[in-house]
Image (cartoon, one colour):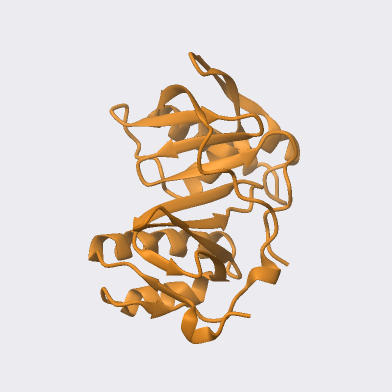
Length: 213
């Protein structure tokens, strides 16, 4: 087991620390007991993954380093630390590996299908919220599973379900603008939407539980 002092994250840029704090805040807003998974990307980038409550994962990439190279932590503990941090490494608290469920998509191997105006997805989310408000127990599975947009391009064909639109909107990843584009990418098993402020991904072949227990 990795000692507490050996579990650390360093985010040198103040702007990146602000971005990470915003990401963590939104993840906690969706689940106050959220657990995040931090994974090193290359030499000086860190991916922070979080469940969204829609069986969709969200990720934000910032400049920095993490030790160990793939680890988990309580989102609220990381948020409290990053809000007080400077460019020096700070501790992540206790490992939450046993609380993480689900696998992460691979870093590579995705084909670019096409780009979608961000405003189209924002408008779809607004309409979805209106429909969901008719149900006191939250959005029904039938609404979440409904494919609301189909994208066709050189990279193939992709049907985007409402659950991904909800997740992208809930995390605030896509600006409400026709000038902004959201990139749609796929591989054999995963569908991914890459927006200005982060990405969401879903396993198309078998959605695994992505919440924590």
